[in-house]
Length: 248
Image 1 (cartoon, rainbow, N blue to C red):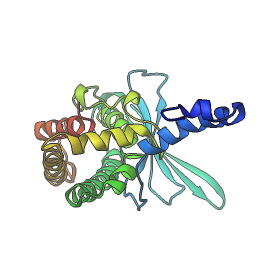
Image 2: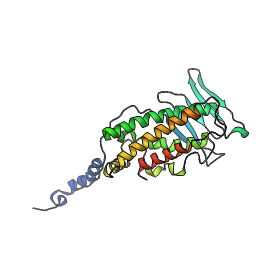
Image 3: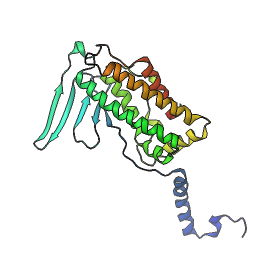
Image 4: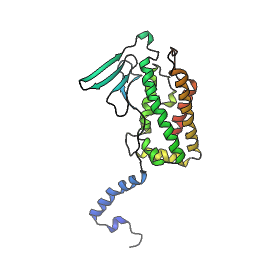
């Protein structure tokens, strides 16, 4: 009976079980351990803008809160859930000023960027310590955030080129799942390619530096420039990080 295939040894019923179990065993071998932790990212949700299809409406929700902001190409909204019901505050924009960042939009961008910066710091440290279980867990959320952040930037600044086109994250790059093989494939590729982890850490640090500088020098000013946009350095740093993260 040497070198006999398992299908010949088992009876017909067991063959079916073996065939059914094999894909599951193969799948389990592809999935690494995930260790959960409190990720600082705000939740960004995308919806279509019927009046401007090239732009998206973005909902911003801080973790643990039932309230949320909605950023659109023109008017923005804040939804406050109270005991008495839902209160909706409208932050109207005139057509002649829709290309400027309002105070409300600036506050929401600051909240979002703060969550991104905190996450980047944690991510860079996890890369340094080779905590792949935490990197895998983060990958269940980070690509979705980056995809929505691209559209949030375009909508808030009312500019399709607010970030480089190369920084756009497409659905094919990730799954909305805590146990996606795409996450394992991505993290394994980081580990397999020589010096990639070092380059990814450098890209994360550079993005942290450029975003903090832009926040301090531009976004945080009480009198912002009407034509305020991301600096060239922010755009380049963000695009580089996306390329390094997704191995593009």
